[in-house]
Image 1 (cartoon, rainbow, N blue to C red):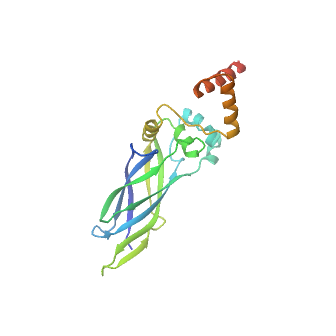
Image 2: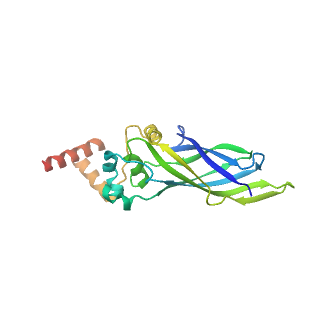
Image 3: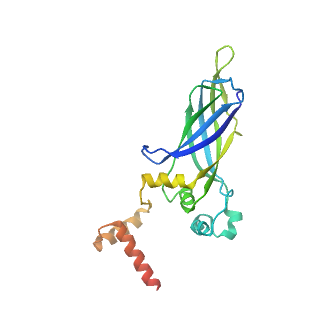
Length: 215
């Protein structure tokens, strides 16, 4: 069985994708440099290892809705599933580098988006868990199939600046907020009844009214 290792060398946004997409530059290598692989159907589960970084006071406040008060973080901070990704690795001998496309979302109902948005700077600790099918030829030239062991993984620290640059590219100076239908209907009625031309002005007016009531 081929003994493979996986290493993430770099990550960058794909600027011309239809939706936010990060390309993880992934090096796949065989233990024996002369070994030849016909192809690999590679699957990857990406986890956020949120306990493996320090958080500033500002970040603790911004992550309050996700993890609760910092004094409870020893109970609430746990490794989180971010997403799944797949790629077909073409034929290679020894080692090769492929781009693993990782879809991203700016939906603030998703825990990973809340987490990324809550970070000011630094890096996001990731653990990539690999599985999949290896296609290769034996010494007689016959096609064989093998499975990637579940213990194969790679660690990578994704700079938060890379994630922010990607979202700034796809959503310049904006953020998305998903609302229940009944709440949207109430906002729409408020906007129409008061003759407010834009949604930005609706939110600004409601916030101003709430702040005035608190004084």
